[in-house]
Image (cartoon, rainbow, N blue to C red; front, top):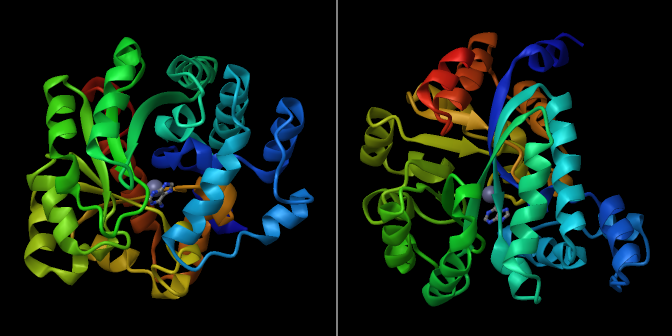
Length: 322
Ligand code: ADE
Ligand code: ZN
């Protein structure tokens, strides 16, 4: 159909994708067999049937279980290469990929294994791909600081750091020191905020952590003054529509606030978050939103343009896409 043709033809950047969330059930089972890992699901179908989420935490529990099959460098490579193939097919020209090293180092996987597997796949892809290391906010700041320390030999392989996992009860302020350290190191800074958490978390991500983009941020509209500020400062929001409906941030796609975000002058972008768990990659996210919401072709162009503007590509490379 026409919508799919238009969406497919648009070059775009993806700015919010957790690589562990791109692990498809088939690959989970293949890696489990390859590594001799026992899974608490009898089949690919049984695993997929468990993807019935009620909120962020119900998803995270299954997402961390799925990641338990990743042990060798080649596993991280294969997962990343599979995502980059999907991105290429969706005409994603540039992607900034999140990964969660603590999910793996806590299981005894070496930092080197995680970095080398994911990074090598990025180098082997025709898609421009950079990496953002995320700290898990349900763990302590001390754990984040030692993760940063352990990542020191590999900092040339990442462009920035982020903050993800269980939001409510883990405000940005908890990570003030580790973000200050990352800022001194010249890393780009982003954080999940305002997905399930209140607008106050968006504000403290900006004022305490000094992040350059807000991941999700859909709850910003509950605070008019903050909305005006985020628009004025052109702080991008990396919105993930299919994720928001699967995790019940919005009950249905027709209830999603993407149109209101754009109409408020916010630099919103569309992203897949955890495509293997939420039912679709980039183009599926565009199509699902455009089918459910009163979005126009002009909105589509704005979203694609925003994705490059909000990226951490060097100015001259951004220019090529704008
Ligand atoms: N980790 C993976 N996906 C996430 C999300 N949507 N929110 C917080 N942490 C995540
Ligand atoms: Zn996310």
